[in-house]
Amino acid sequence: MSGAALTGFATSLSLILAIGAQNAFVLRQGVMRRHVFALCLFCAASDAVLIAAGVAGFGRMSAAAPWLPVAMTLGGAAFLVVYGALRLRAAIRGGHALAAAGRGGSVWAVLGTAAALTWLNPHVYLDTLALIGAVSTRFAPGDERLAFGLGAVAASFVFFFTLGYGARLLAPLMASPRAWRLLDLGIALVMWAIAAGLLAGL
Image 1 (cartoon, rainbow, N blue to C red):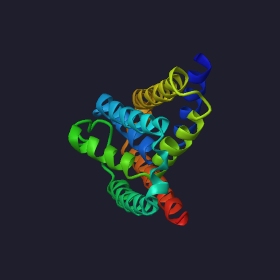
Image 2: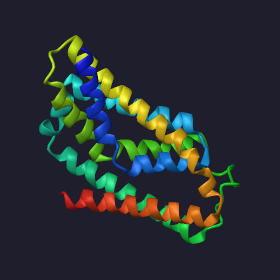
Image 3: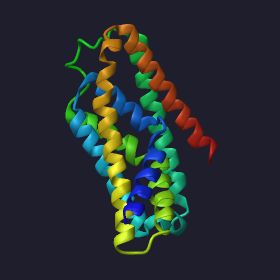
């Protein structure tokens, strides 16, 4: 069973390592040290739900409802465009230094943004429901498949909490408004690049 767990851990980690919209948001909140625990817990728990669904065999949902991937793609792309525009506006306005740690929104606003970045992202369904679900079929139903799923979930928790709390190591670099402008600009470009990729795949 340890082999199944390690396979699940490695598969999940390889899928979430890429810098995406959700990861960029966690990074930004981690640098600001705002609601990091709640945000990391939400992202990891969301992954856990989706991974469990994929391992349980619900990856066939898109086959049963062919319109679902297109709807999720359009909704996710629209949100990413808007959120990217907000980050670009913040980059242009500037005046946002790390000393202004009181900013960053309430915990509910942060979790609301995280929910949109997570659940409106079609890639997360491809990664968890389809890809992880497909890999899990290599293991026999029961203990082996459960070990695979737990390994995949563990990777998500390790990744998000490492990203969220490790981001504070960047704090000395983020002491100036200029650094925040660059971070916000980078996040805006990442959001738009992902949105463009989603629309190009239609």
